[in-house]
Image (tube, rainbow, N blue to C red; front, side, top):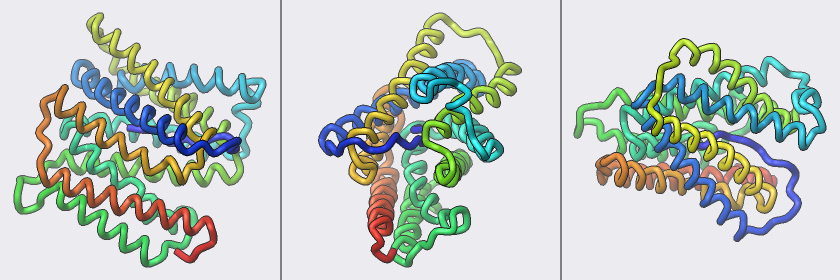
Length: 302
């Protein structure tokens, strides 16, 4: 699962390079999800997320010092409560989502998680005061019909794990909206700093009570998880440095493809036709909402 971050001001717009970097970023985050699922099943979710955020915090501290000159400058904010809520919400969402991986598998979890942009569109009104036109409301409704196709009500016994995945998608969408809200007064570098450091502090307060021994092989995977997380976030920053967000954002859906492939080939998951059809509906609706968001930013009525 991909953590939301915003980028420094655009310096150029190389669409091909941006799309290539987004595809690579999506693949790395998919690998990270696979590693997270394995380690959560081998140990526990809390410990995995805690160690992961230790490395993430170290990364944002080094990045903040390099970009802002000091940790104090990187952390400077006039809205610390909002930044703390964002950080806590993100680590909670990651715990919920990884738990969903262990219940549903990567393929079905990501198919449900693809509804996140639709949830953001639906909540942008009450949270940010934005206007959502009838076209985007229609896309949101179609997208949630796609979720129903994935869940197959009346065809298969309802899996309560789907509610966990939906909860994770809702939490990630709310995190994204709060990040946008924080961006009205704080720089993206400041929000990124608080995400890593605040998340590490919050997760340590919980994860230390769930510490347990791990095999040497699992520690090697944990190291790979941490390194892939840093690499993924660094690449994501580069993506938005070289290309416009509206150009590359649709290609973030490649994570659904990559994660599903890992789930099927590595974990032996079964990819049901209804999951594929439902995911296609959700992704199509999500792409439409991204297009309407781009139109709205260009002052075209939504």
